[in-house]
Image: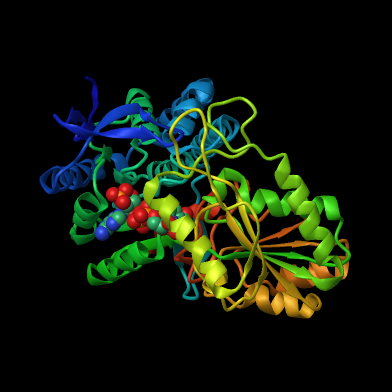
Length: 477
Ligand code: NDP
């Protein structure tokens, strides 16, 4: 049995591990992956600390070449890695390949950013003095990632961390270590010096917690649940370290009377159910004005008839399984809660049997929901959405913003006035007009407001805010 080991100080280590299970077929073991201990994690942090002085001063061409090489290999292996992703996480093969391509593009983007590092030279307010403003790497960056984007999220954290000269201790979600192991292997073979990138797979309560508790981790970037995000925040304040959090969402998708019905239905179904609804940018609150409400609900019901839920790797599957049993229970619990609260389960919500044993759930759509129900306030993170009927645009906007979260917000309308007003007034980090709430570009900022995010934005050139620290130097001429 091959064990995919952890990478600590440039050595692959770890003698025993846990099985990575395919949620489309629980009899299929994707691979066995090592579990790091507290000591392993401490060794990884020490290795990253030791590697920092040299890497932080490495030439930009060296960093560019490594990231470029990694990008090329990820893109060349997109079908194989996309398949691995779909097998371990359960999103469809098309989605798995698409996410892998995105990871390659992210490495490519940051390979370019290495060559665009810049500062500013300003005159001083005092005579004969020059001022230089430069950006320096932060130090050892701890990266903690969730299971729902097993290759893109690691890519959008690792690539900028390395690009700007930081060293890394990387802990992927225990549920999906396969893609993380693969990209670390690619980066090492691309020429990363020992200790610059360390992989510590294993339990959040052990590995992640050790990272949180270490005074030698200078910054932590985290994506996952609100509860764990708060732990990261508290521990980081304690250690006076930089931190960045991407957490939950309860993203609204507004449909106005003047919407193009086809556009609205496609965007709503995609937002709520594609990738099994397991996206922080998924929409689980569909807010619909009364003039279009009944036609919209009927059209969504019609559209759902042609949606195939099956094995992620099967041709023709539109929606794969839920990621595991725990998440499936969370989804079905919320379906029960919604019914008890008085919402009407209009479509789906039942467990499905397929050729292979997996966690299959028919996309569930509630109607007659109100915004104070738990299904409208708490992140479910599955293929479960609720339609809230409203009078007009003003009420729709008020309800869209009435949430503790603020990641993404969408609207379907043909009115320029409403689209413009919504873009300005939606309390979210990302706003989509006639597009699904999920599905973003890799070269522009990603992130939210309120309870969804904390710290500076991820992705694109805005990533340098988190992965660098600013220095201001004064020189007497
Ligand atoms: P978690 O927040 O528990 O997991 C995210 C990452 O944090 C994982 O790598 C996890 O490790 C790690 N972690 C867990 N505990 C600690 C700790 N004490 N210290 C440091 N790191 C830790 O989310 P889950 O995966 O359990 O998902 C639960 C819910 O969170 C979902 O149902 C969904 O509502 C939400 N979620 C939101 C995401 C988003 O993108 N907004 C993404 C994923 C989940 P380990 O793998 O061992 O658990």
